[in-house]
Amino acid sequence: MLERIKQWGVRRVYGYPGDGINGILAAFGRQEGDDAIEFVQTRHEEMAAFMACGHAKFTDEVGVCLATSGPGAIHLLNGLYDAKLDHQPVVAIVGQQKRASLGASYQQEVDLVTLFKDVAGEFVQMATSPEQVRHLVDRAFRIAQARNCVTCVIVPNDIQEEDAVPTPPREHGSTFSGVGIARRALVASDDALQAAADVLNAGSKVAILAGAGAHGATDELIEVAELLGAGIAKALLGKAVVPDDVSFCTGTIGMIGTEASDTMMKECDTLLMVGSSFPYAEFLPQEGQARAVQIDIDGAMLGLRYPMDVNLAGDAAATLRALIPLLKKKDARSWRERIERNVEQSWRTLDERAREPAKPINPQRAFSELSPRLPGDVILTGDSGSVAAWYALHLRLKRGMLASLSGGLATMGSAVPYALAAKMAHPGRPVIALAGDGAMQMNGINGLLTVARHWQRWSDPTFVVMVLNNRDLNFVTWEQRGMQGEPKYEPSQQLPDFSYAAFAHMLGLGGERVEDPEQLGAAWERALKAGKPFVLEVLADPDIPPFPPHIVDKQAGQYKEAIAKGDAEGADVQRGMTQQGSKA
Ligand SMILES: Cc1ncc(C[n+]2csc(CCOP(=O)(O)OP(=O)(O)O)c2C)c(N)n1
Ligand SMILES: [Mg+2]
Image (tube, rainbow, N blue to C red; front, top):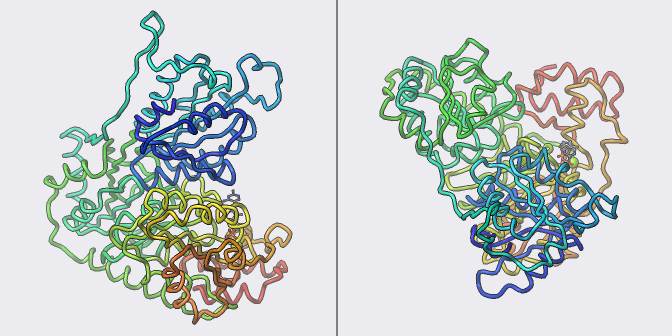
């Protein structure tokens, strides 16, 4: 099994042991040579799955995780769903009880095929004989890559102890599978491309929305936008796809998007959507307002959020390259200039908001101070929570930077494991994880133990975990106010205080708690130059609504209702909402 996995190019497997996989772990131990697969022990199987997903996100490779039967397998699930919902190729290998015990209500016996049937629906199989192992590995890796999905191979522990059968016998019923798959560069037919070009050429106010699927198509997107005089908005997962210093890049879209993106979508007459399944369709043009073209590698994801005129199944870069010769350069520049003015205004507003005083630190300031200090080749990860909003709004990413967070599942706890996987795949690049205190208490603190164990092997030790310590599950607190019109429910929302920086010191890492906003810039510099991993703990004000000003203004009525119903932080909520753009 390991030999075959190695042939698929795997160099690292994230996992956690148990008697369900001791046979496989013994094989790890027997490996010799430079190409031995590294086993990375995580603190929790969920972290192993997050790391496999992070590996897939920050490389062009399949991520692999390994867990034991029963509880270990179950722990993987959330991380695997994160990969499924963000369309990442991940293979999960899990143990199972001995074949003879299956169906006997045996200890730790869980029906794993059924358990994984949803998350790994494209391919989940349990080996019942050693002859199967070769083709199960081949199919799991090929399907994960071909369909950008999660697959799963289940191996009962007694099979792990049998002799390997590297080549099945040449007899009826055997199958003879092989290794490898070339990257796809699928492009739709010439007719479909011409139809798409006709739609784009006819428009006079073209808006582009790019998502994670447009990764690798930066030049093509910019060239298309130049030809069409268009602006480019980005879905959250596509944040690194187009640099924020491009004057017509309107930034992110949606609840945690800029007003410039919002205005562009409201006013456009033509939409080009590339590699995105951005879910909040109310932020796209109104149905009937715009003619539209979509490009997606997965034909099943086309025409899902807006009734497109032309749906192109295909690779983003290859399809855009094929479209470019068919596009006519638009001479009128007023639409483009309007977009650029709105982009400038959005950045100005956000910078002003970040400088507003708060108690003690305006969380936005932690991001606006980081932004100009981002190392050129940084890899950024963000967690779910208010961090995601400030990450989306305040970081001006440059070309060559990589960044991701849990988009589709929006699960807490992904930032630190993603960052670890990024660092293990790219030990020479600086990595920054941005997480809330809730996410740290859920699993990030434990992830720091893994950081402490591994960092001395990294050629560049720069690894910063910035914790927004607001003693609150803040994003949800604001959802209680802004979506329900209800006050913060203290028993569910308040978090225990904890000294993340002191904990970092305990582990031999660098750490600092910042309580004065004027210290933030210097603290970021110390963290980035520490020469070892660093936990930068920012004591943040929980009463700044984690939305851009135009959204805050829209939700103001509900915030007021929450205050009227007796929100314990009422006065500060009023201050925060006014500061963040509400006129109410
Ligand atoms: C696993 C999981 N549980 C619950 C949620 C719902 N949720 C989304 S954001 C959030 C609050 C996050 O709190 P924290 O990490 O402290 O970040 P903050 O918003 O306070 O900055 C919660 C509970 C989730 N997304 N994922
Ligand atoms: Mg918090």
